[in-house]
Length: 394
Ligand code: SAH
Image (cartoon, rainbow, N blue to C red):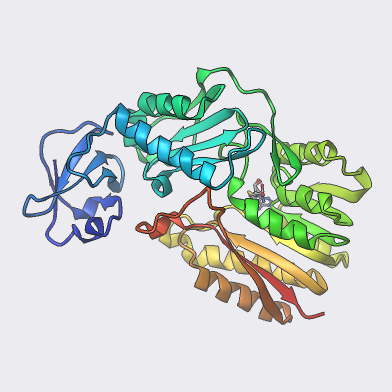
C-alpha cells in the first residue's frame, strides 16, 4: 500500500495517473517492482490501484481509479479492446496500413506502447508495471487484433530508469518480414521494425505529412531530419519538383532511397544527404540554395528541465537557418516532440528565429500529434508533438 503525504492526492482526484516519489509518505508491505499497489490518501481513503516502480522518480502509475476493479488479464483485455476500438473509430484499421494502437497514458495503459504494421504488432514495455503484465498484455493484443505476429522492441533508453534491461524479439506468432511495407495516404513505406527508430515509423506525423503533401506540387523541398523519407516521399508523390532529404543516419537514408524508388519517384527528383542538419543547412546556405518548402522535424532536444535553455536555443538555431534558406513566399514547417516545450514557447522561439533571419511570416497551420497518439485530458504531459507551418512574405 502507498500512503500519500497530506494534500498530495489532489492530482489523482483530477485523474492524473502519475505519483512522484516526493508525494509518497510511506510504503506498507514490501511490494516487488511492477506489483499492483493500493494508493490511499493521508487519511487512508482509497484513491487508485497503481503499478509500483521503486527504481524510478515516477514511483507509481495508476492502472485504475475504480475501487472494485481488479488488475488482471481481464482488465488488460478491456483496456486493449478500448484502444483497438478507438483506432477503428478513427478509420485507421485498413489492413495494409499502420497506426499506433496503444499510446501509454493516452490509452490508460501507462508504460505500454504498441504500433500496428499491417498484420503485425510491435510492442514496447517501458515501465515496471507494464513489464510485470507483459504476457497478459500480449495475449490481449493477440486476441483483440488477430495479429499474425507480435514483435517486442523493449530497447528504449527509458527502461533503464525503471531498472529493466533491454529485450527484442518475436513474442507471439510469426516473425514479421523485413521490411514490412505499409501504406499511408497512397504512399508506400518500407519499415524495419527490428532496427528502426522507436518501433520503426513515426505515425505521429501522419497528419503533418498530409498537410505538407497538399502544398508540395511544383515545389523545391528540403526535408531535414528525414529519417526514412516520410515527408519527402509524401511531397514527391504529390508532385514536388525536387526533394533533398537530410539525416545523420545512414540506414535511415538507405530506406529513404528505397521508399522513393518503391513509390516510382525518378532518381533525378531527389537526393539523400547524410550529414548533421546544422552543418548541412549552413553549407546549403553558403552555396546559395533556396527552397519553397522546408520541413524541420528534429529528435527531442529537451528531455529534462535542465536541458530547456540549451534545447530552446537548438530549436531556434535550426528555425533561423531554415527561414534563411526559404525563397520568397516559401513555407517552413518546424516541429518539437519535446513534452516540456509548450506550443506558446515554440511559437515564440519560431518568431524570434524569423526576426533573426530577417523575414516576416504568418502562421499557415498549427500541427499536433495524430489522433492515434491520443493525449489524455487529465494528463497534459501526454500531449508532446507540436509544430508550425509559417509562410514568409513573397
Ligand atoms: N520526419 C521523420 C522523423 C524524424 S525523426 C518522419 O516523418 O518519419 C528524427 C531524425 O533526426 C532521425 O532520423 C535521426 O537520425 C535524425 N537526426 C538526429 N540528430 C540529427 C542531426 N544532428 N543531424 C541530422 N539528423 C539527425
